[in-house]
Image (cartoon, rainbow, N blue to C red; front, side):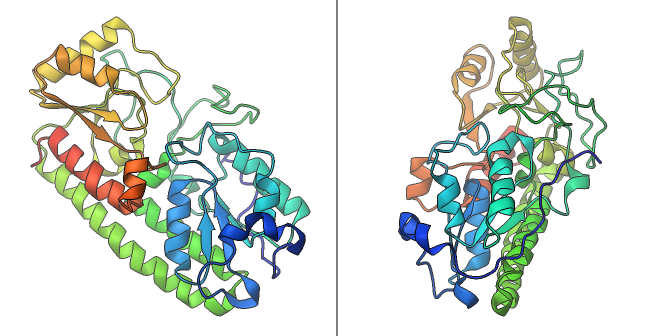
Length: 347
């Protein structure tokens, strides 16, 4: 396939670069410390950081460079990040053009720093990636998505992406919203940490297996929604980051925007969406918590729906969720599961 991977793993070689370690003193003292001084790392955004810390347990600590309230794609790091990451022991990222800054950083680490384990969490799930189709939808106003898993055939190099500069076929990067694929990615992180820290490899694998059991519960919750849904479609008034849930569970999310955050819905698309809400007897309209709720609120005001309900792509966190200690699991179980239950009438 055409998905470009700059790395799978690079075996770490011991202690981080001592001369730069002082600049990241806040993240280098986590836990009891791994073997050979392995004790700290960076992950490219909220979800990977949460997973890496779950896998590492008390043997290492990971830091997320992306600020609270922001997402890792469409983000630009400051000039010191490469040096900060190079002073630690591991970098966990997605080798996806939507995270081109992380791809570039991974390449720099591989070329110039053989002390940093570079772990691509997409390793092993490439064949499950879905096309990043930036069209609004088909002629009937439905998303151009058949609800089946697997790798969709698409056009090569059809757009430049959010960051640009990586001219290759695009895949939807939001693979982490699928709890089944998430378990595979967590296992990849565990394997990646075990390479430079073999003394703790079994502990990392055990932590990943424990976390996978919790992801199984998320999977079961979405399966239950699919089985008990009163309707097979819900409205998401904004950028659709949930193709992987649609593919896994047969959900259908109608969005007047489509998958691209750059798209603006036409008045006809909004009117068609309002008609769909009314014809399906929908009580709620979903919207992405990391986007403005204005479109959802407008659809509610002009339809028979009664409430705009937030969902999360689980690629970042808010101040409120951060203060409450929400990780990926809590965002899925406390935000998305109840919202999807209401949207599909599965309560």
